[in-house]
Image 1 (tube, protein in one colour):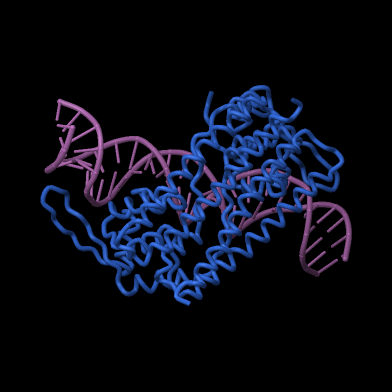
Image 2: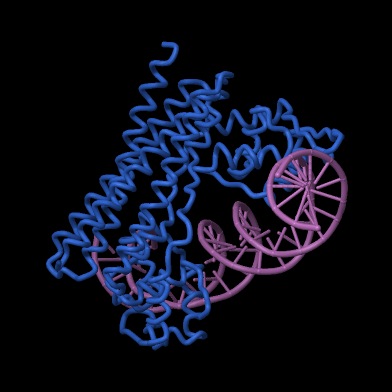
Amino acid sequence: MKNYNYTTYAILGILTTGCRSGYDIKQLIDHSLNHFWKVSYGQIYPTLKTLVEDGLAEVQTSSQKGKPDRNEYFLTSKGIETLKSWLEEPIHQIPVERNEILLKLFFGRYQSKESSVSLLKEYKHKLEDRYLTYVSIEQAISKSKDKEKDSLFWLFTLDYGKRVTKAAIEWCTSTLEQISDQEA
Amino acid sequence: MKNYNYTTYAILGILTTGCRSGYDIKQLIDHSLNHFWKVSYGQIYPTLKTLVEDGLAEVQTSSQKGKPDRNEYFLTSKGIETLKSWLEEPIHQIPVERNEILLKLFFGRYQSKESSVSLLKEYKHKLEDRYLTYVSIEQAISKSKDKEKDSLFWLFTLDYGKRVTKAAIEWCTSTLEQISDQEA
DNA sequence: GGAAGCATGTAACCCGTTACATGATTGC
DNA sequence: GCAATCATGTAACGGGTTACATGCTTCC
């Protein structure tokens, strides 16, 4: 079986959730996977094309009144098999997150104390925003009446986001304290 | 002032630490920045070339007995200015970490319970390894007699790695429990 | 009249990894 | 004799973002 990149598997997976068009896929990613996965239209449309070429999906163009035509994609059984076999594959390696603030802090000696402090404060603020976003998405999923079977798994990914973000916020607090205490 | 990519700033920063050659830079990154930054030779050598072209650094080729020639790079004052002004710039956005295991879990409904469990266990194991690596690097830095002024900042970045990794490990434990409890 | 949402798509560009090429010395 | 370490570099490829192009409808 041919190997695809992660983006292709992500799209394959999203096609199982009821999303059908490139536009739908983008919406779902932006609203539900955004904390650990991003995809642009520049990837989505070409990928959908190759899915069809490789027989993993089929297209159907539907006309709608008042809206542009939609190309709707449906997984074939081959598509479902490809997805499932990827899901069963072991994880290759945990990614190294490139972190701009750590890079700047690493060279902190060449920076004023004030500058390090303001970078950290700003970063902390962004993390706090992110945390609140996670909480609100979590509540939206928990409250939704049509408890899909997916929702448990979606909550797991949000829980990950919350825990890791919280740890990062605590690190900001601790680091800010240490920088302030230093040669006070 | 021209804008460069992060890799360029990373290399600019590393040149302040006493590393002089492309080889040295790679060594330092692999040993000290590896938990939040990676760079390959395919980036280092071309970048060093453009640093010289843009007047941010100067080269000096030195012959050594028993070893190949080394191209040693030294920052110019323009290079130091460029680094400093980047350090003072605010962070643009916190990165979205692409996470393969979250992507697979997101589609967990199409996967057997056993498969999700084994993915998580394997992931947890890798995180635990990573955690231990951080601890040992931390100890090496703390014990080193020549306490450089950099070491405090280096320890900050390791602390970040430890905290975030620990949170991720705890998430694995919690998620594994929840999957096991489910329709037991 | 204008913004926002729906909808699809391409081309240029940037960035990064991998594989390849070369070659000397040291230690097992 | 072989592996490892030191050392530099390029080319091909893969992946991703951004900007651009198009155009209709609905709501303010």
